[in-house]
Image (cartoon, rainbow, N blue to C red; front, side, top):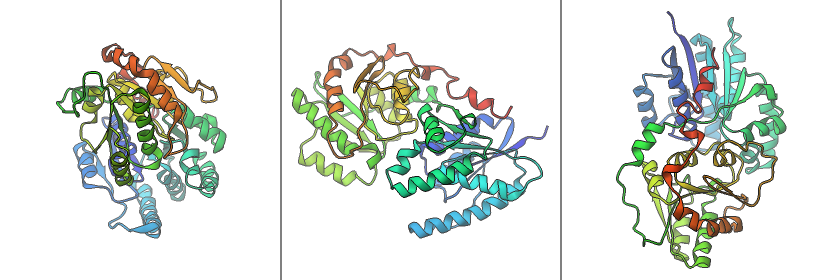
Length: 397
C-alpha cells in the first residue's frame, strides 16, 4: 500500500520548543505516512541529526545563511521560492506548518501551486500572539492581525496549544472559531521520569533552606530580572537564605550576573543543561515569571515530576496546567495569589525589571506548603500517556 507524504515546515531548526514538538508530532504519523521535514532558515547540525535518527527526510530550502534584518528577509524570499517548487512537485497529502512565517508562507505556497488535488493545510500557533507582537510594536501587531486573519482562515485547521491562544485568535485576529482547535503539548513521561533519577549535585543548602529553580531563555519575555529582585526581597522579608537556580542562556546573562553580585542574591546561573528533569525533580519548587507563554513545557515537566510550582498567571498556559485543565476561561478573574493542588498562581505583571509584589506574597505564603509537599501524591492529566497525542491521530482520518 502506497504511503501518503506529509511535509512538516517550521521557521527555524535550532532545538527550540516548536521544532521539538514538531518532530514529536511527525513521529505520530510516521508509521503510516512518509515524513519530510523542512525549515525556512538553515538548520543546526544537531537538529539534522535528530531528523536523521527518526528516519525522516530533510528537504533544504536554502544553501547559505544571511545576516542582519535585510539578510533575514532575503532568506525568507529565497526559501519561499524553493518551498513553492517543493510543494508543487512533492505530491503531498498534507502540510503541517509551525510558527507564523511558516504558516503564512505555506498557505501562500499551496495556493500558488494550483494543485489538481487538495493539499490539507494545518497551521500551528505556539504562542499568545497579541502579547508576542504587541510587546514589539503597535504597528507589528496591526500588520499581524491583517495578514494572519486573511491567511489563517484559508487553512483546513489552525491548531493551538492552549484555550487562551484560541480565544486570542478568534477575538483579536478574526480567525473563525470553527477553524481553531486546541491540542495541548504532550510529554514523554517515560523519558523525563528516567532522566529525573540521574545524579546531579545541586548547590548544597542547610536543612531548613529551600531550593527554587527556573528554566528558560534569559530574555525580557521570561522576566528573570524581576524574578531575581522579587526572590531576593522574599529572602530579606522572611530572613531566609533559600537559593534560586536558573537554567538557560541568552542576551541578559551578563546583566543578571552583575545583579546577583551587586545585591548578593543567593542565586546561581547554571547555563543550559542537558538534563533539566533531574534539576526539576531535585528542587523543592519550580518558578516561572514569564510575561507571556504558549504552553510552557518546562512547567508541564516540573508538574509531571511532582515538583511544587509557583507560576505567573500569564497568557497563556499556566492557568490551565496549574488547575489540572479545569479552569480554561481566561475571562474569569482569579485572586492575585491563587492556591491550587499543584502550587500557586500569582498575578502576572508586564515589567521585566521590577519586583512583582504578588510573587513575593506567593513565596511568603508557600514556605510551609513546599516543605509539606509530597511529589509522589501529585495527580494531573499530564500523567495520562494519551494526553496531547490522541487528538493528533484523528486529524487525518
